Amino acid sequence: MRLAARASCRAVPVSSTLEIMPSDANAKLKKRLLEIDEVISARDAICPAGVGKPALQRGAAVIKAGTTLLAAVFEAFVEELFEKSLDLLHPTKPAAVKELKKYTSEKNNNANNHQVNNLFFYVGIPWIMQSTKVRWQKFPNKKVQETLGSLSTARNKIAHGGSHSVTKNQLVFWRDFIARLADRLDVVVADHIEKQTGARPW
Image (cartoon, rainbow, N blue to C red):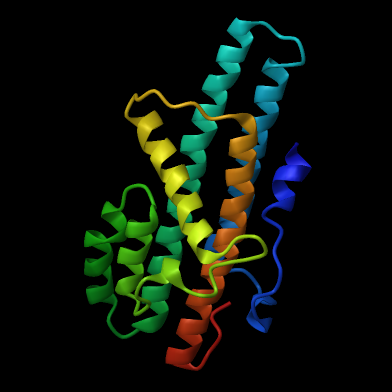
């Protein structure tokens, strides 16, 4: 199941700029995604084949926790990528940049499409989630936005005590989706910074 879910998110080059080193934010995200893998493994340990309803309920709770963790991991990535971008684009204005972070990334909650777009307006990349570079095989940009929206909605419902069911396969799918999305956002932001400063940031 895991391989099948990953296959749907398999990437193809959008441009040669994809062959770059990841940002520090992206490298950290990739390491934290290993925590999601641990959550999935824990669910499998709780719910072997033929297990009864009580164990299935415990497994479902683990998957819900993994969903909120995944949303938090992506949020942290977006915030760090945004803040690093500001530092690189405005190195002579540290005080102004610090003040801007105070009222933007430091107050950000749940990195949905709107929140991601809103942050990167300040970097000079309007509607970053609609970028033509934010797509891959079998994942046109519209589907990318819809998928992030579904993860964000699930996170909100779970975090606020609503009734929302998430399957193991759905979490696996979202986990691999977030890995791909981070790679694409890395490229969009790196291209913008290079255009503005003349130097590739990562």
